Length: 111
Image 1 (cartoon, rainbow, N blue to C red):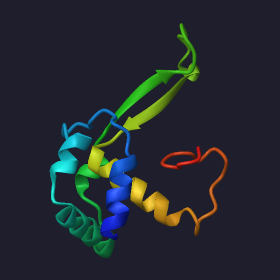
Image 2 (image 1 turned 60 degrees about the horizontal axis):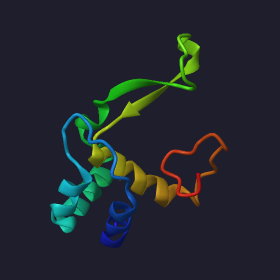
Image 3 (image 1 turned 60 degrees about the vertical axis):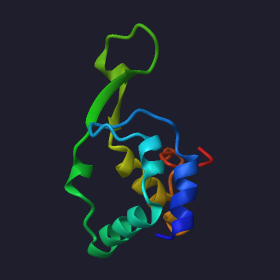
């Protein structure tokens, strides 16, 4: 990962809810970007992201108001902010190399 990629991804990241670790976008901005990028590059080199990336919260969101049928809910997985940022960077890097279906919209700037 390049420092510029990280800074661009951090700027475009939504001010969304923190994950279970409580880390917010504001907290990430206060860290030394060079250190964060170095860690992310180690994860890529080792082909092994942190085990904490496997932990998250699954939240059922209703597709429309007043539904009770479980089929009318979609599941959203809330990960840590660091995990979401790392995935955003990977998605941005791979968007030109990997064909994505029309339903694969996570981390896409156009969808």
